[in-house]
View 1: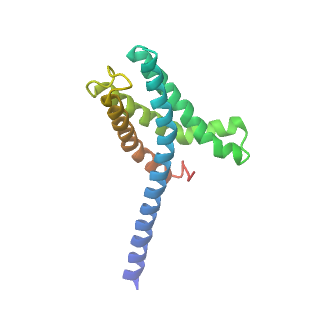
View 2: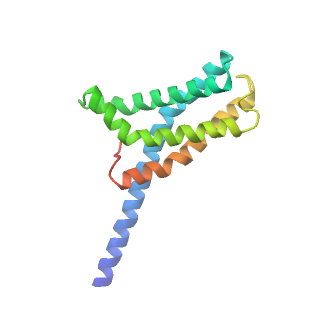
View 3: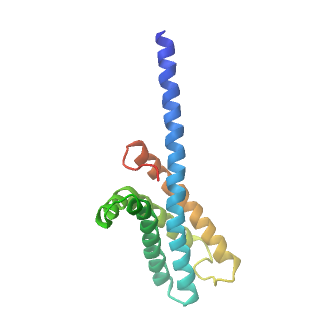
Length: 156
């Protein structure tokens, strides 16, 4: 009987891990949509307007945070949160994930040869954007998993 009890805990633990993993994937995809839209928009705008690499990255990161926060706040505002309360909740639950994702994306863009010098019509620009988004997802997933496991972040 004791043995079955221990197996039951292991099953629950495995189910919890799977649940946390699914929620972390969902949270990371959600973050990727907001950050990714902002990041790509910033890179496209900066590149199209011939901004310096530094100014293009600054714009991309700012837009990544703005889009990430807007996407994070939207369901909270719909649920009746005040703007201040929604912003604070997103800052706590999403801020670290967004920061980690943006960092990984920028590092990928900067260190992948040719991306920062490319024009919008060149495949290397778009390959760099896709690889940056993948790097952002891979970097932010463990952050989201940890925060969900600790109860800091919940399902969207």
